Image 1 (spheres, rainbow, N blue to C red):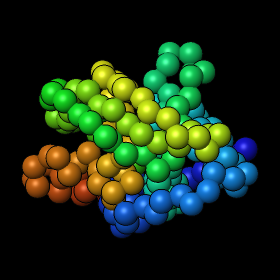
Image 2 (spheres, rainbow, N blue to C red):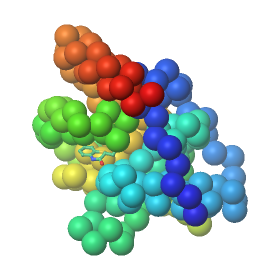
Image 3 (cartoon, helix red, strand yellow):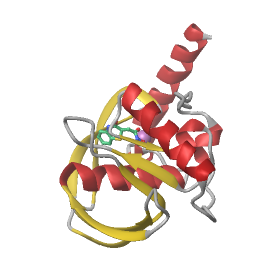
Length: 167
Ligand code: GNR
Ligand code: NI
């Protein structure tokens, strides 16, 4: 197990569309385990592989209070969605920024699990928000893309300044 470094906006590597996984093998399960450990340590409720510089369609999520109910999504696809809801989102790749984003309020998602078997899950509330946020990462999309150009450029400047400080 290992904690992986998380890329920060506006790193261009966060913008690459991720590649489908051909096979859920031992190496992929090791990636899922490292991503889960990284997400718990951050701490966050979800993590997509592009955030740890792995361009694969892989997501982990755990919205439980006890941090003991992980969801694994390999090659996830939203097969149905309904409604709209605004939720205040944050992102481990855009630290300390929280903004309202409108998304579908209910989704059905199809994916492979940690065992490589296909399954479907229906979600609403925080889980639905998180699934959509993570699938966006697989397309190179970030929650700040839903904000105005003005807000996004302010956030970009803040992040660049922070990075100059910590380098
Ligand atoms: O930890 C996270 N919290 C969160 C809160 C509201 C909406 C989405 C999220 S996902 C985020 C972790 C993350 O950046 N995943 O990509
Ligand atoms: Ni995120």
